[in-house]
Length: 329
Image 1: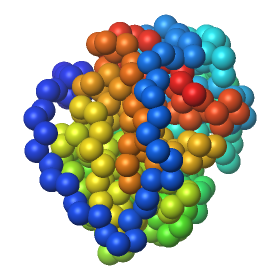
Image 2: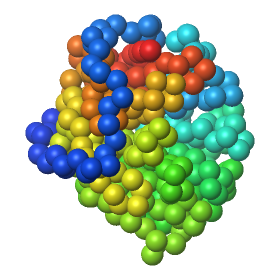
Image 3: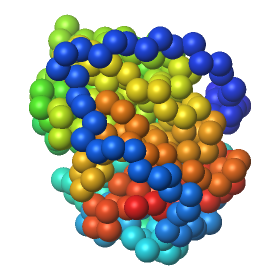
């Protein structure tokens, strides 16, 4: 399993997804195209293969898990290194998520199948459970104040309250990353291996009879909720596009982006969705249902994870291939 995770992110997959026609009530672009951005505000060194980062709005810091160096890089809003934390030997830290209930940051370990809990730069707990199986994405469910952990290896999602496991529910194949839809109060997880998104009741996610499996593109990875138009944006790694849905199963079209999109984040100041394209080393900025502009990252950077810093209105993007983190505005 360790070898699988180490190579998954470097796959070269042809575009095979279809584009869904726009519905009459589809979101529309609110801004016209602007010249592409070709530079970052700054860049910072990370560990080997930095992945899915998370923003801590209390300390105003970004946590970057380094998949293949068993470490966590912590940066401040000006892209300066705050700390680099070493994790146990053999760890594969994959994704980070912030819990506003306790102001802690949770980091999944895809190899050792455990979850680390950080307070600032300090590791305060390591959560182990038989329900963890190659945990990947991690995110907060505000309806029940639990952290949700996507178990890629068992097609389940485990919920954690503080440091205690609450329950586990079954979803699609290869659950990956999360978003919470505030409009319908539902938690969504992308299922990388089954080309769909499982939508769960945010308040009662253990009720599997309430689950909705929404078909999207090929190998869905990142997902983000757009508060401006109440839609969810799903990055399809295998079909080089972003599917626009709502958490009840409605389809509102798709947007062609760069090659092999991975991370997705919502910029609440610019009312835009940012998509990190790992194959083309670009970031697609989506406004409504079209790409408003393209940010060009360094050649060979392999942009993957992406997080939004609300304090500085900047987007942090991790370069999986070249061990760097870039900040764009």
